[in-house]
Image 1: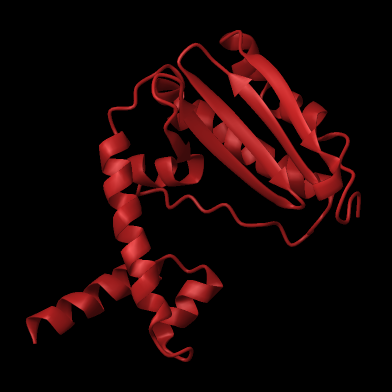
Image 2 (image 1 turned 180 degrees about the horizontal axis):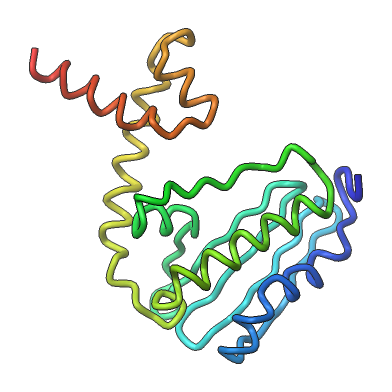
Length: 180
């Protein structure tokens, strides 16, 4: 365990290393923000049209893409799933818990995925943003519906286990209920 609640002093270095290819290729500006009292660390990688925000709050790593033209924020994992649904990107917290290796693994996942699938977005192509917000709205509705189910319901069990097939199951159940 390298940090329990506070103290991940290598986060900035680990982000720079994981994202070095993107940083160098696009002459990005890297800045860090820390709140050690609350165990929160953030690194911003600013490109000409967009910005990546990597936020580590205790052991939860979030990666957002920000459109600099209008400050809209998007979760990278959701963009990946929207643009490449056949891949079913899942970013799971590593069972290693609070180890530096687990965080580095997550950083590498995001860096590799962005380089492979989201270069157009990094360069300012946000033509998919309306579809993103529609999908986000639908997902919110599905979560509300699945939480109404009994805890023992198979769809809710899939939801809690992180099995993404719960969404299609919930859609089918709602469709059947409407057709009755």
